[in-house]
Length: 274
Image (cartoon, rainbow, N blue to C red; front, side):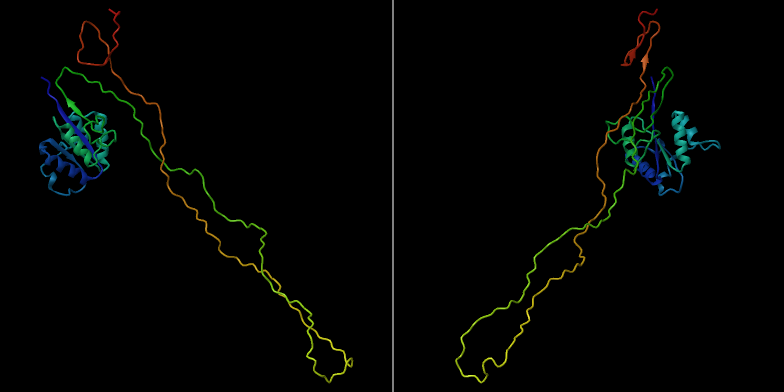
């Protein structure tokens, strides 16, 4: 009979979130004996009073030693040790047959694993940052397969600039202005026929009539015609990026008279080789 122990390990950037995750684990039925915690800074409540520390208590004990003793891969244990030394909190849960429940709770409060990916919160997500350590009885060997994943990063760069200035443009403009001028007219009208004392031809008479008119003078005065506004606003668009990634695949090579069952791994055995 094969006995198996399943454990999830998560990193929390904020100790309060880690304590909230521990509290939620207990509220959903996980016992304090199933939970391990390591974090720096003062506790925010009594939630950790019955939770065992991830440290062994020995003088040389570290998060790395404890996780390796729980069969966490050494590379992952080193990552968690570095995160702990950076001031982050570590939560480990012996999930048994409730692996998905524990994964969703850790993800809900921002837990992430050794590959720095946030835990998925749906049952369909099988690839997460959770590291699943399994200890089994002798007789089985495991080969872990890895693959490269693309991760996009955005960085603002300057693509150009826009400048706003004004130039003076000269143009000819014409418009009509109504003006008034005086004209001289001569009109003959019949006399009254009354006697006059002034003799005829005794003295010549000259009359002067000044004639005026309106002249147009032009003045120029600057006025505000309109306003130009130059600004910028973000525009959201989607760009597609692609690259070549690699992945590891398992191959089974059989030697001798053996029968491999229950596997969809490609068989590369040379059938003509004795």
